[in-house]
Length: 631
Image (tube, rainbow, N blue to C red; front, top):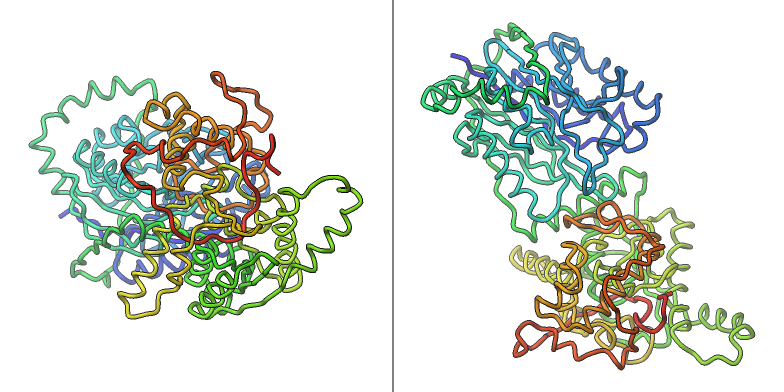
């Protein structure tokens, strides 16, 4: 019987923390060994962390990475481990080390290097060309790394043709909405196409803007799911695999008898397959009873976004040495959701809310903010900003003489609040969380050095409509669990407002967020042009205005704090546009004042559909369209 007890070791690594990463891998190896595992598969670049970016250009970093591998090898004596690391030889390679009998028995170099979206691997790595098949006690395993498996003609094809029955894949696959299902569909296809078991181990944890969701899986030779690890959490999954089932399935698959043709077609891309022969370590105490592989449940779209935001925030705070966070509480839905997520990530004792009322702050806003803080159990400070704003106005009075009040005075309030939060951060070591969402950041509805001032932006990639959906989801979850919902109902129902002048509402200037977010999804995430948007039924004048807002505020987004990526096209790592840019496709009408904006309801695809809009919003900044450059 050619069986293998495989362990998927889904762990949370930290970039550059070699000692901690080695300790975590060593500890996981010991657990897997105690459970009878014969081979343990770890994530891509787990020893140095992913992505290490320009640290990979530093010789001392690469040397520390190699020392980490050498220190780890002795831990793999009675179990074989496949571990991701950066291999420095003639160049630097994204590599997998096969640790066996206390030594590095072999190394595989990643062939396909992604260089799109958030990936820059061709900047750092050389491409490997030699497929590797590991024969472990008669069970043949192909070793691949992440992107190798995404290509239908990747090295796994040659490995399977050369006898590999189990295809191992080390991965650091970052999360975005819908990615999990796409990834599993791809892996199931690879398993069925190659008539091979596919075992995939993914990294988990937050790294700056990126979140790795785990979700490690095993698919059998028919493409059927065998095991699935937890999402957004460390996990160790064991499963017993039988290579004979693959052999029997291949006897009935005539496609494999055309292997010579396949090899000839791929000959120019790869060197001949290298075979590594290893014996299973003798271990009479190894448990003989079989294990039942767990299959963690799939998460809903809102659940996975919630977990991604919580994990991304927690790891950013903890891995960067902070103990507490602080944020402004305005009584609006953005600050409410940010506070609730922070409590989920860090606990109420580590979250500090600050009320910063001005002369135009309503009693309802203050009441909702205090209600939120009480529901969450967080500490609340109150720092009125009116004296600060008055002092600004007095100091600037001579310079502003002869000019009427405008958006400048409104922005002084936002900037006063930013100064207050940063002062508290300096004094107490709290990380400032900004509360702006993707919709606002897209069109520049935010104030530089005001509500944009801070260290981390949880909602940076979360559109306003999704903010509401997540808030309702969190509330419903708590109600189902018999708990008090964290976000007050009045916060959800109030019209969104920056509350920087009496009676201000977002919709005085912006289209309803339901419409705005549709346009932004098409323009920002799908790169559709203005003409295409108009062809899809949106009002031409509104499209032109939104496009100008988005294009004209790249300089602001460059100065925003990092935030968690949950979409396939986030600002920063994904969407990279020049600030100095005169590309203006087609004739653009002159920028219109807010009074001249078209009736936004005309942009609805179905004009008979009423555009409902409810909810509050934390203090923001300025009104797009008032100046040629938003301040």
